[in-house]
Length: 507
Image (cartoon, rainbow, N blue to C red; front, side):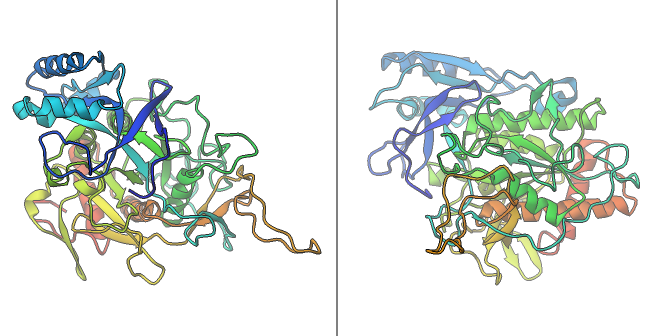
């Protein structure tokens, strides 16, 4: 894990309020089904049951409920509150995924204890029940004064040059459909590049009158105030994270339209369950856009700059989970998914990037370890590691056979909300004429930051640029999911160091 978990850590819940979080201890904790334990964080009072489209989950629910009662704990069963629309039904099918909420936990027994007591008796059904892992953003965790820390900076050039809008921010003045890049993060704050309504950032996008992301709207906005604890506090650790990512995409593909999907706040954490809910809502939005429903539009690329580790390393290849299922649905609908690798200097897989199929990175591009891991029915999932300015792998970057690309991730220069000016101040010289840098004054709008969080949007922007170039040359965007998958694969093959040829995949 990148940093120790604060005492009493909690994670924000989609329904409001906070959920207790625990860090699994490999030295003492038992695992469901046995085996070697590895560190992870999970929501203490919730387990997730992944649905089965051919059968119910009543027997599994009954078993879980009974075991909880045996341990003096009652449960509440919730579920996704969004029924698929007609447009989404063919992709989503029946989705009886549920959350099982423990109405109380004990020091010696919580979601992990419930899992241990159930899994050994659940047979094949055990693959359908899992912990609700805590997802954490992938900015680099660095101490004050560290060169990798978020630092104010100057942007010496002019703003990225963008083709004028036509009648819609989704179309240029020449009638070319802009690629839409969804950024699942903290949102996008105020900045001169993004402030003019309806030009670059698609702020008003909603699903049935509600935000696409499930993070509670009443919570402090990490891209506006930047700090939860008032005017005298420093900026939250992930304040500006989404705006910074948006700036990287915008510099790499100025003609992309940016769709902010708020999934966490300034602490940079969300539950796996809520992340899956946000992905499903984005998928619903995208499918309505493909169907031509007014007020909706398709998405081309999605950036995820966060992840979590699995407690059962030997199960990495087989672990499904509700989050993975939602991403697979999104990829089957034609959306490219780009995910950051994580910042622990490890080969241990972090998810969702770790769900990418194993590859070999060569001078001629990415070669799949097994072509059967790729399919013409799905866009590829692309994991991205971080490089130093000289092209070497960054010391903090995770890496492994599950990583498809390496992109700049150290001392990246990008946008920060101009509303940010934290409580810290730069020191002054004795005569008062000289000042050290004010470490959290971003009112001029730019900063440098490091992490695989900022490598992933670089690749996402490259893919968006290829998509835009094709459309500008006369290639019309596909009108259905299968056509979108084919278009996405074509874009991937045009980026020089990604897959150049995949057997069975038309490009």
